[in-house]
Structures are given as structure tokens and as C-alpha cells.
Image (cartoon, rainbow, N blue to C red; front, top):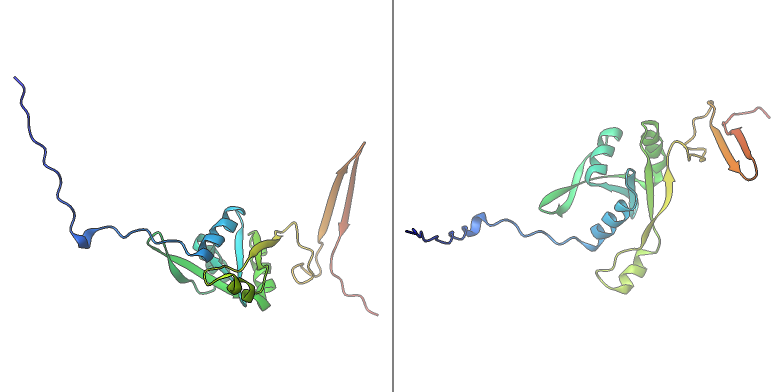
Amino acid sequence: MTIQKSIQAPEPPEPASMPEAPARVTPMMEQYLEIKAANPGLLLFYRMGDFYELFFEDAEIASKALGIMLTKRGKHQGQDIPMCGVPVERSDDYLHRLIAQGFRVAVCEQMEDPAAAKARGNKSVVRRDVVRLVTPGTLTEDTLLESGSANWLAVVARAEFFSVLARDFSLHAYPR
């Protein structure tokens, strides 16, 4: 003997309990995520006008490391997007502080005038690209090097034999 039990279809959920549809990613945020994915393990200084903006986990890390305000910009997958930023004119100060704490930074600049992007259409995004990777081992700018301390650069070259060159790039003030 076989017993059959009918299975009733579940009731559809109430409209109020329906999950929020995933928000579409804005063209600017799509560009940011693409550039960030190409530079894993680095904080991304993403140029937006007169500021370098950081988003998501980068913003949370930089906000704590630099002691600056963490805010938000829109939503991504239903969650607020954490954001913080530093003025371009003071960026070397902030880069120096991050490098001193052991962070590595990718600097992403606007590669065209915003007017050129707008001429392509309302939804066009200003072209951006990483122009500089700032790590403790790549510092050459006077503003980022510690004055009065040794700043060594070493090069190893291999041809028929190995060659090693090391040089101190310390900044010293000499009387005239």
C-alpha cells in the first residue's frame, strides 16, 4: 500500500518582507572596483576632482590609520559604501603617514579632463589609471623620504655575472 500526501506550494512572502533587489553598480564604482581588483593588497587613492577617495575596506583602514572621518557614498549590494578622502594638495603628507605604518598605496589619477568624459555622454566616466605605486621600497620623492636618516637603494643585475650596487639617497643639508 502506498500513501500519498499532497504537498502544498508555500505561500508567497508578504511584499514588505521581499529582499531588496541588488542595486546596479554605478559606472564610476564599476571603474573603481575594476582598478582595485587589478591592485590587490594596496590601498587605492582614487582621484575625484581635488581629492583622493578611498572606498570599502580601504576607507576603513585609512580612516583609522590617518585619524580622518569615515563617511559613506551610496550603496553596494544593499550595504552602505564606506568612504574617506584626502585633499590632493596634502596627499604627500598622508602617503608618508601610511607608508610609515607599513601600508602600500596605488595612486590612481584622472587621465582626461572631466569635460571630455561629459562630451562622450552623461553616463561616461572620466578615464583613470594607476600612475604610481608607493611602497617603502619605491620612495624617491624628497617629500616622502626621512631627512637625516639613511635611505638606501640597492640594485642587483645579472648578465654573465652578478653585479650589486647600493647607494644612500639621504637628504642632508650642507652649508654653502
